[in-house]
Structure formats: C-alpha cells, structure tokens
Length: 141
Image (cartoon, rainbow, N blue to C red; front, top):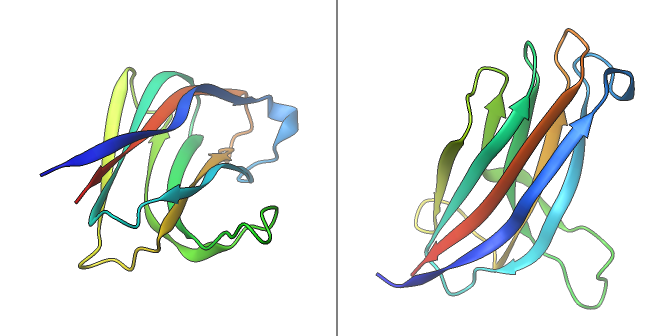
C-alpha cells in the first residue's frame, strides 16, 4: 500500500482567556483548504497534543470536511455540511498524546479535496485555555 503524508497543521498554539469566550461558546478556524485527496481511497487524520492547559469541559476539536473550493472564487468557503471525521482533546487528556481518525472512500463520500477546521470550546465554567497541537493527513491508495 502506497501513499503520502501531508502536514496540514504544523505545531501551533491555540489559546483564549476567560473573558474572550463565554461559557459553552466556541470559535472555529479554517486551517487549510484545498488538500487534494482525489487519488486516494483512505484518509487518516493524525493529530498530536503537545501541551495543554485546560479545566472542566474545555476542548479543542480538529474536523475534516469535504472541500469544494475553486480557483475561480478562492476566498469563498465551499465546505461540506457535515464532518467527514474528527477528533478532540479535552481537559482530561494528558500530553503528549496522539489520536487518529479514518475516512474510507468505499463507505464515506469523499470529495476531491478536503479542509481542516479547528474549534476551541469553552466549558460551562469559564476559564483560560491553551493547547499546542499539530496534525497530518496520511493518504493511502
């Protein structure tokens, strides 16, 4: 089985202070779009938690979406309405930690391109949060 590894998120720190995000609210960031997966039958999202300072039910989520972006309208997001696959690190997770999530073309409807979105979620108890994460896509044909 051949394939390749695509770094979709180099080591990056995400953080907010308690006043930045109200209880149970979240904020999302489109990290990368237009990753060509058209030649592959399986995608593995491999995410690493390098560091984390979290309390109660705070978490960071990494989600992979189908991406219909086009060169004719590069500033517009054409993301699928549902998550292809995703994973999260929560306050109870120790670090370093690695998690994987798999998408297979025979059972999942994969577009020619995918995008990665990161979401930070504040817990019911408002507090500061920070996480250092990185992620790759392992593409297999």
